[in-house]
Image (tube, rainbow, N blue to C red; front, side):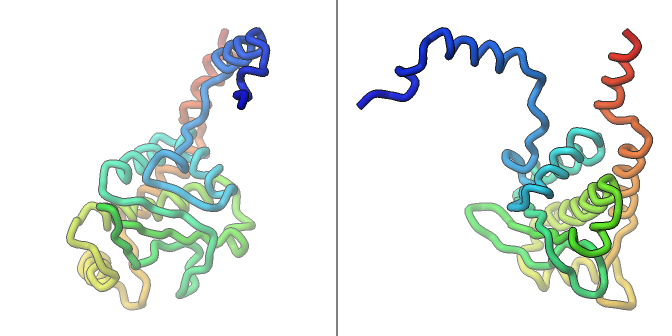
Length: 191
């Protein structure tokens, strides 16, 4: 049996390696190597863009990676008329707590700017950090009770000021061009 690489001329292999080394750096790849993932290509791209463009979003992803959690961000419908949500379900396996965030890409969010959707995801990632920050939150009822104490409301939805602030910071960074990419563009233009 011959190996595929043995049929490729060495010059071609070295040329490919040289091309790869000369290429611009690969983006953050948050969806594949971190604790934040998605089965949706569109959401994976937004996760990657958020981590690349917003220092706050990148910090949220890093914070999740520092906990015992894996968070899936998926397209889907939330209850109670909200357009995104952290489901209060939690699954434990292999030493990890799995959480799920739903983002309605077909509804109202489909008509919003991409940066607004990324900021919305950042807001929900903060909620995931709130849950992952307390190792005793290992069941839906424990999460429900946690939010009942920390973010009590008169209806069946929960909200924290910290999550609102995190989403707003992400949105501000994306809108005002204070991100790494914009800084690099400014440096390149100034040359």
